[in-house]
Structure formats: structure tokens, C-alpha cells
Amino acid sequence: MLTLEDLSVGYEALGTHRAVAANISIGITEGEFICLLGPNGVGKSTLMRTIAGIQQPLAGKVLLDGRDTRLMSSRERSTKMSVVLTERITAGLLSSYALISLGRYPHTGWFGKLAAADRQIVAEAIELAGAQDLVNRFVSELSDGERQRVMLARALAQQPRLMILDEITAFLDLPRRIEIMARLAQVARESGCAILMSTHDLDLALRNADRVWLMNDDGSIRTGAPEDLVLNGALADAFSDYGLEFDPFHAAFRMQNPTGSVVHVVGSDPVYREWTLNALRRKGFLAQVTTPEQPIESPRVSIVEKGEWRLQSRSGDFSFNSIGELVQHLVTQDIDVPGK
Picture 1 (tube, one colour):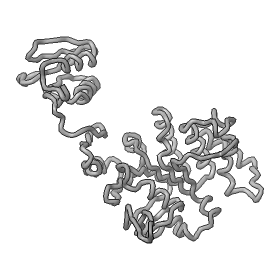
Picture 2 (cartoon, one colour):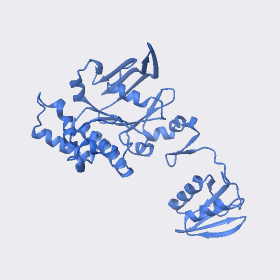
Picture 3 (cartoon, rainbow, N blue to C red):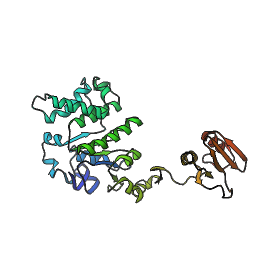
Picture 4 (spheres, helix red, strand yellow):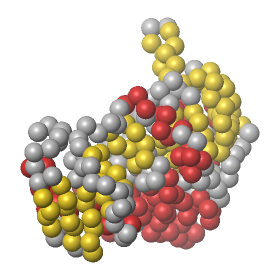
């Protein structure tokens, strides 16, 4: 449905081309929800703007339903594609409802009058974007997060074949980000609309995207199911130059090479054990899972039961009622702690 043929994107300045990504040949099929991931500065927004037709490609083509988007009129392109970028819009005294309704303009007559069917589509878009409480407010009064919800509703109201969404969850709180990502996946699945969304929400992308486009520093793109990119090491490779290591069990990055002391953790409850490890690693300790049978060569934390942690160390045996108390005790002991 969307095909990039040998696409090169970048900028032209003083008669010369500066490509940030070149020779991209990749596509999206109907009903796919694709998340574009990658470090800052690799050219994700440039790629998104080029696909959207806002920026001209340096070489190659962007094909939508087999047609070069550069040969489409703006009206034809807007019936097939909707775009939400990170730039703040200026809408004067336009109401949120009026702005959302503009999404129907490519489908209406010269006067832009909404029919009953158009109003129903607008209402559904508002509900999908979670913008019901914003429709009667002026756009100029909205916060950044509220404005993004309104812009998403406008994009949904267009009923496009393809949605281009650039960091639309950047200003939303966590519950709203979770909700929007899940709803976008549902929209793609149920409507057949393809969605390409750039995001830094790694966890949400891995949980919701059908495929990931992973953009690297050299402008190349690796693509695949999120689970495959975790297992084949592509995600770890993309951020390896930033002093980070990827934890495939938790789909999260953390700083490489902790410099603190080794602390062994014993516990049968997986939830309590993982959060204990998380707290220790956050403070720089090299936390490792062990068993009660192994000899004590470094501090050992045993999770006796929910709500009780026992520490065995060279300073003695101690009992704590919270992870916070445990970590604070370890940090204040005469052991090798980063920054101490």
C-alpha cells in the first residue's frame, strides 16, 4: 500500500545534498501498525516529513497505492493520507471541534458543509482519540498534550488509507500514551488503515506494533516483528554506541558495566525478586540472582516473604520491611558503591 523505492532523504543547502538516509526500499501493507524507532538525530522526522510530502526526497520515490505522491494533487493526497507532526499549530480562536471537523474537508463539497454521515465520523474520531472533554474549548487554550489529542482526532476524521504520526505521544501522560497506542493498533486492525508512527516509547512500541522500523546512525533501517528485533540483537545494536545495554527480558535499556559491588539476591517470588534487582541496579550494584546453597562471598539479600528482606553481609545480618530501607542501608555501608 505504501512503498519506498530507493528513497534518499535529507536536505539541500548551497547547491549540495546532505543525505541522512539513503537507498531505503521498504513498504507497509494495509492494516499494519508500524513504529519507527531509533536514536535522536538519525533522521526519523526527516523520513516522516518526506513520506508525508512536506519535504521532497533527494532521490527515489514514495508510492501510495502504486502512485508517486509527488504527482498527486494536495486534495487527492489528503484523501489518502493524514499527518500529525510535532510542530505546534496556531489556530487562533478556532474551536477544537471545528479543527477536528476540518479532517472531513477533503471529502466534502466546495463549501465544506458536513453531512450527517460526516458528523458521525467526526464523533467517532473524537471518541477514539479520547478528546470528548476538549471539543468545546478553543485550540489556543489547550496544553500540548490536549492539542495532540485534538490533532489525532482530526487525522482520524480524514479516514485516510495511511496515517503519518510523528511523536504524537510526546506530551501525553503515561495512562494516555498507553490508551492512544492501544487504540491506534485497534484502528489499524479494524479499519485497514496503515499507521506509521515515530516514537521513543520503546516499551509501548514493542507491545503494540505489528512491525518496527529501526533506524540506525548510518541511516539504514532494519525491520521486523518487535520480538524478532529483540531476539536477533538489532535493538541492542542500534543503541550500543550510547553506553547502553539492552535487557531482553524486560525490553529496557540501562547503562553498561555497573561499577558497584556484587549483591546476590535470593527469592522465589518473581515479582519481588525482579523489583529488588531493579532497585539494586539503579544504585549501581551488580545485582545477580543466586540460590541459598551458594557460599556467601558478597552481600546476599534473601526475600523471606512479601514485605521482609534479610541481608547477610560482612557487617552482620539485618532485616528490612521495604526495598527502600534495604538499599539505603547498603549505600551507607563501607562497600564499593559508585560515587561514594
